[in-house]
Image (cartoon, rainbow, N blue to C red; front, side, top):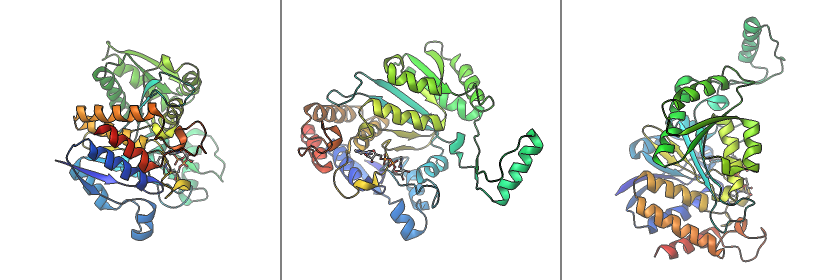
Length: 358
Ligand code: NAD
């Protein structure tokens, strides 16, 4: 029996979480779910969107699967997702992006793995608000150190990138490549402009690469990478990036394989693993039983593999692939037109996958 923390999330999170839970249970793997609410509603009730009980549950169970959680823009609480990754030191965000047959997309045969650093960079959460005493001090210090003037009405976010953080994420990318028989790792950066942060990322990545002579290594500047991915995605394999570029390129990769509805992910650390879709809480569809549960279900497939339940993972993935290929019981985003009246609901799509598992 596996003890697994399930965080339903908010917005459309609870609907897709329920679908994913039912489908995972249908594989027959014995799981005791520890259901932990977090997010917007919990913030309104408990004053904290990520109560300690949630973190304790994940630390105890070591494995969690979560639905998306809304982050208020500009004001309100800091991203629960970012806090979770930082607190549990889930330093790697792993996002495989491959096309399933039958998915409507401009690209066929895309098979990329995005390995995103999850704890550093501009997402480190070190920010200084416009007009604050701290920002004034910082602007003064920067002027003293560099002679450069930052406008007094600026807000400032800090971008730390370390050798330690880069080494472990690049090592992860190479180890993943080796274990999964992938041929190449591409490191992505903007080292030509940010010499001391992205430059360090690149230099460190090159050093790590020398320890993996069996795997090809190359680097790309992030803007060029974006263009190349939409022109010739087949040239790329495992892609390792600092946090911010990783976030952006993950969505780009999701677009290549048919959209956010089908893009799964995992946040991995030395101790714990939290599986979650790439997409957000899509709040405008909340309660409509409408959105695609596949990203969360495929995150469940990744979770089963993490638990070394390879057979169950394969069966589930095959069931998903077959429902996609049939194209009948799929949600609106997988139909030729988004207002297609034959679109399945979230729960119907889950039922169709469960029927394939029987
Ligand atoms: P989003 O991913 O929630 O939605 C963008 C659009 O993508 C939706 O309007 C919808 O058209 C489509 N979409 C997303 N999920 C879908 C699904 N399962 N099926 C079908 N279509 C789907 O992005 P957003 O609107 O930028 O963010 C909404 C909220 O989610 C924000 O508060 C954001 O901070 C948060 N967010 C959370 C996470 C997370 O929990 N890890 C990740 C990204 C965004």
